[in-house]
Length: 465
Image (cartoon, rainbow, N blue to C red):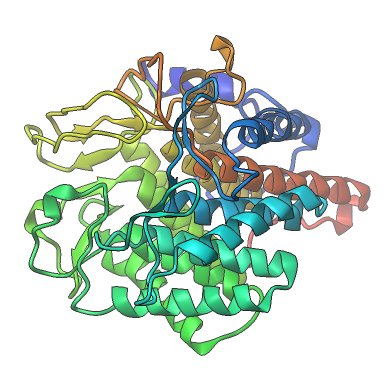
């Protein structure tokens, strides 16, 4: 299958993919994304979120009795484990606070965020100032913070900050800022030892390793904080994070970001040519957000170009979708066994590409490409948005099998259907729907306003100058 054959039915608009700042000048009814105009796509995403996904979580995942969320769910909502992971608790606080802040201030959303926040604050804080990684449904500590897996605390900091905006809770605000600063000081120390669940094969390292995934968590949380107030220490976190993502983790030889660096920013030899496409695209759209906050057009354009290159290097034009990894110039590489959470399979890949496919990668792909398309109208962004949308909806979303809100989260290269899973995603796919709806709202509003101006008065370049 050629690239043209793979994308031609997903985009029906003129334009040049050679100019990443080509403005989008067509009327709303003429712009096609994933085969829909902006209004149709917006309605599609809205219905998916508010009529399917959120009711599913309300019925099956939200713990209305004790507070918090349980994500060990099969397609039909069967609850397989009542444990509450700090990752998912922090993410839930953010999701429902963000929904409250941006979609009509529905008190039900704020109540879910409040009860989750209170559950975490009551049961998860440890005497040493860190937070337990997993709790029982009732709040018993099942796994204290012992593994070095800090992501859950980052998500808690993000959630507490958004909740503070929603509720005016100054205690939550102070806790979020203090936690982010504490996490960054630890992360930015030569004594830091990364223990992320995705990389068990480096747990024995005696050197500090700082992954791309933690840099972009520091960045996106700090950017959100700076949008609502200034703090010199938070500014420093943003500056160091942008430098790490754009300069330190970027391998100019291959034009891709690498995931793992030592503390001194040198590359572990076995990691030097590797790129994790979903993380790289996620990191880069978060830099786009920071570039918007700064009104830095050069940084924004550089990010957009790099997002495009990661798509072109990582897209599987045979079976569709983004590959998980590439190890450039290593055609016989034996990838570590992937035992992805929520499924009952293990994956072993040999070759330059690690072809695990995941819903979260495609969720981040849709956020990134729609952000680029909003600013530039670039054809390549529209093409990849449509391709990622089709993969997410045709391969991962299980609506055609009678589960209108449920998804398969991980799969093999061909994205083979798995009849049962043990986890649903309360964050990446939900965040994608939220952010893309808001992006489409801006696009529709801007196009409507532009169409009402006299032709000579229109500003046809929505990009940052």
